[in-house]
Image (cartoon, rainbow, N blue to C red; front, top):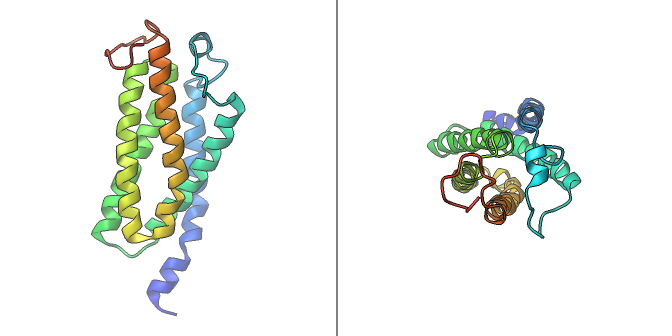
Amino acid sequence: MTAQATERKAWWKVALVTVPVIVVLGNLSGLLSNSGFGNPWFDAVRKPGFMPPGWVFGAAWTTLYTLMGLSVAMVISAPDSSWRSRGLSFFFAQLILNYLWSPVFFGAGAIDFGFLIIIAMAVALCLTISLFWRVEKVAALLLLPYLAWLCLATALNFEIGRLNPGADRAPLGITGG
């Protein structure tokens, strides 16, 4: 067995670290910012008709964080290349934005700023997927459900702003909230 084959087979060992770390940090971000239902500010705002039930969010994010952990483990375990380095940079940039969004949107009630963060997150995720594709196609494919969910989250963020003029605690004039 070649060294490269051995290195590629070891991705699951990396995943034993990346998956729980990403899941726990994501859950902490939501927990510390009182995200979702049960947050007095969020409970008071009008929601769009396409808003999923509250229980869906916990299940979706746990699944998506798990897929992110698997994806990044595959790329971390891949042979070093400029695509890999750039892909990892964009992955961690979007992950930081992901962890920042809940405290901004739910914790601070900053709808417009949250919208800017989620747009930047989506751009960074698209770049991540493109670069991961050049390194490990399965790793890129594992991020597609996250991209789809992020499109829904972006629409929800915008619509909550549009439906709630004056609810944004730090308005920037983007969504109308």
